[in-house]
Length: 64
Image 1: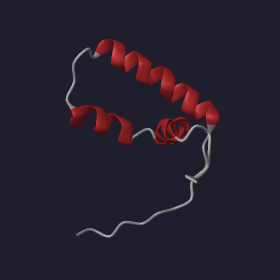
Image 2: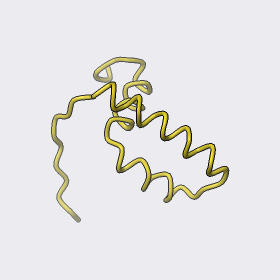
Image 3: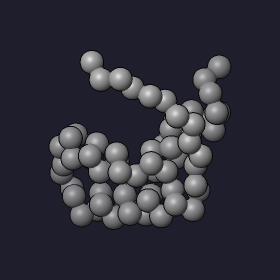
Image 4: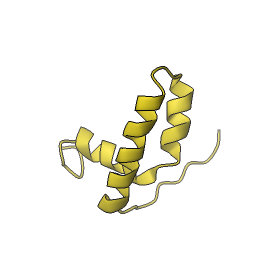
């Protein structure tokens, strides 16, 4: 099993906004896609992933 390392990261809202716009365009131009393709796409967009995580936690930094 590969070692995994956690590291502290900061969310760059300007970059996240740019990546979100790019993601919307990607979705518009890719009506159908495999899970693997979207995962590969998102892996290269750290700030977008952090923004999604923040939205999923309703703005809370950590779960209660």
